[in-house]
Length: 271
Image (tube, rainbow, N blue to C red):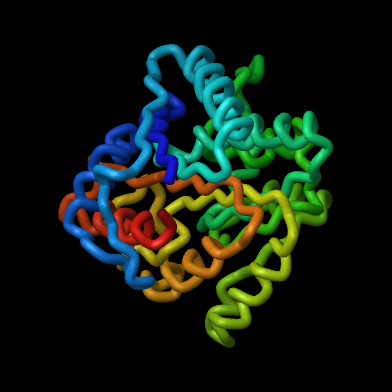
């Protein structure tokens, strides 16, 4: 399995600490010998790489993420990206979008996140790269087909985001579905993805803050760790899944390493 560390942050300060997550997750992964599927977990056998970034030069950083990930889409069957905050997903998904266009394929995107990340950038003039709070809006404005996007687990919106999501007719699978039937939610996600060229973005704050306290913007009333591992196990079986990113694990806030250890658990189930 190809695993790539992408230690990027958007420079606003709130997500400082996310750039340390990749190494910490891999260190924790050494403690997991076998995953729930009975597959041996051997960190040394993983095909590991890192996109070496300079977070003091965000324009150059985003160019590096785009160029390196674009090459990976062209040469690798499936890649796992370890962030970084959620802003890194902009350049990763942009590369996926361009790769699909060049190969005459339709791109599909599933985003697991407590937030919609569709805030409009207020900075004038607009930067060439987004903040973590608006990366999804900017990737849609760039041309990602909004009807091919599914947001799962979002529960903390701003009014302007809801207006944008409704205008773009973006599908949202909320946590009420979990209360009713987690298996049915898995069925909906699988049906959305069937036969599609798929990218999956995972922000750990999609889980309840009890299970993932070490994120930059933790939220209540999210998934339990058991529910989320189940959903990711199902996602991982999707045939045309091209990439998963795992982002927003903040080492500066993860005092007990509970969130890092959970991220390692998740990684063990999808490698």
